Image (cartoon, rainbow, N blue to C red):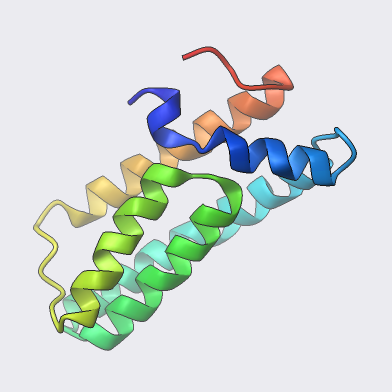
Length: 124
């Protein structure tokens, strides 16, 4: 997936500007994203396994917020779709939900780490 499909570079640049041009805030947020996202994914999968649409929607909303705050736009979009599905009373997101979520999380994390390593947007 192309970098521009994974990340909202405007969100990342805004975070850098908030930090006076430094990447400390982004690095700290990436750490939180790395630590929290797998648990959020597990919450979504557990809710799906229990056919609990309300919990599914709530867990998807939490993932959407965490991804959106850091500019992980592809993961945020998937989480938004899952949240909407749960609000409609369904948890039927397909048998490949775990690999889709985990792959998109890992791709997003790698792109975010590359962004910091490069000190700017890495080239797609």
